[in-house]
Image (cartoon, rainbow, N blue to C red; front, side, top):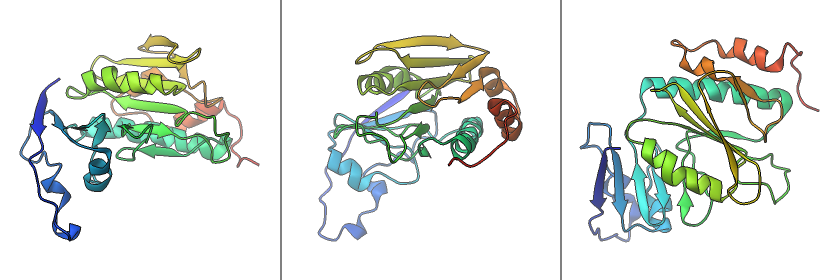
Length: 234
């Protein structure tokens, strides 16, 4: 992982916050390569106040992490999976589907922004995990971060299904919770079906992800439904 570590310079915060643009706090505009920028010495309050809304900016234990902008391929895969999840949710019922830079607030010190995540339904029990499924698409600058710190955090809070998609090597790493705390089954898949255990009935064919161009999400969704008629839940 290519990493740039920055110690945020001290900035005197004026009384009128409107004159301090967020770019003065969390700025990576001078970097044009595939880098993960890390800014130490931050607080959760700093993150909530100054994190830019238009790009990924995560907070873990006092450090801000900002990856490079997403590639076209990354966005195409994200859109493809999001389309399938939204279509499935509107047909069969599931929680809210969100994409980065939406924040998944796990604890006061862990605030990742997954590429895709599915929240439990609004009427779910309070004991439900903060997300049913988390999907991360790996890149050169995020691979170590996603497979290291973020995966450990997702497992620690007990997210049932974690998918790490490695388009470079055509591998999907699927982690499925099978016991208390962070006990997970790990599958390394290049083809075949992978299911989301916490979203009954939802699956994808992993090989879909490696096609270029990607297949029609409408045709793939029909395959997920198995030819069953589409209808609104309830």
